[in-house]
Length: 293
Image (cartoon, rainbow, N blue to C red; front, side, top):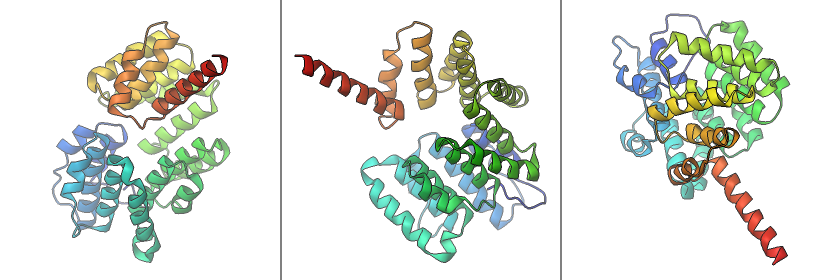
């Protein structure tokens, strides 16, 4: 995890790949010589989080055993949480046990995973209970995301300032700045777009960067450019949930049918927020029809 202490960063490239959504590249380039034991654990966490991002939950669950370090155990909990919706309650109960332990509960990776899981649960107060004190760039970046979801851009900006004071050019600082610009909207959308454009010029293009640029384009009303970016993202990963969800929205605005994208999203990611909203809208429509029957 990106520490806020000075010193050589042997995991810079690996971490950067993960942050920018180059998950397979992170996995492929994870054999790094002369790492300390602490760096080895962080390296393994990044690799397994990359597998989680690619949907390989069971691989992570199988590879991390009871003898693994605490941060890896936390990553395994995230894989268990995402892999099995029916077991979410038991996974969260296990997480709470970890958090109640003074040693495990203060571990930065455990806190990051806790914040991530509770953010998924939309229990933002509980998430912030474990992340608000920061200590790593990852935790501060997660705080920015949580505050944006709470529609508290003022608090998100305070977190961003902390990150900027430590390292204004850090990839997470730049990403957090773009997220906040998107949330604020208006003229800030162009600033967000330029950040993602800069990433696309410096690093290999990923679905995450393409989607981020596309979202900016949609906010600015450039739906045709957004569609081109999203189709490029779809070619990289035909099952990526954010690509499919953004294509549903974009297709509506360019006047093209989008049921195929929504059907794909329902099949591959039935828990996605857009799928739930579509199901809710369908239910409401059915109820409205019945009231007129």
